[in-house]
Length: 138
Image 1 (cartoon, rainbow, N blue to C red):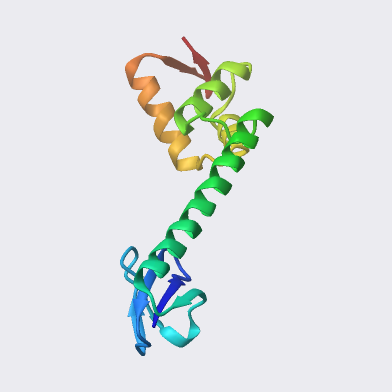
Image 2 (cartoon, helix red, strand yellow):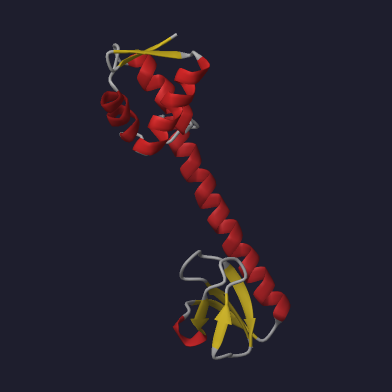
């Protein structure tokens, strides 16, 4: 019997032969009790199990592609990176303090430590000046 199961941690789908007590995820290494894993498909035929796993992976891929397309159309979750988010905050705010840049970038999920690191690198390169605790992008 071949069973297509999913890892509870990383979601990797794999084919398990037989009914072992435990199985290890090839991607993240988690060891799980076979009985507790969700079985997506069972078959006596290995090729049928492979096809089922391939269909499940394709369905996941289609869902991810659709979600990315929707985000792109709505303008949410675009391709703006963390560094670009910090630069945009420096550009959009009028002589912001470090705290104001951290707050603005934090709205997009950029960690405060990363914002400080980028500001410092920009300052060392001469791309940003700091006067009385306020920054200006050059």
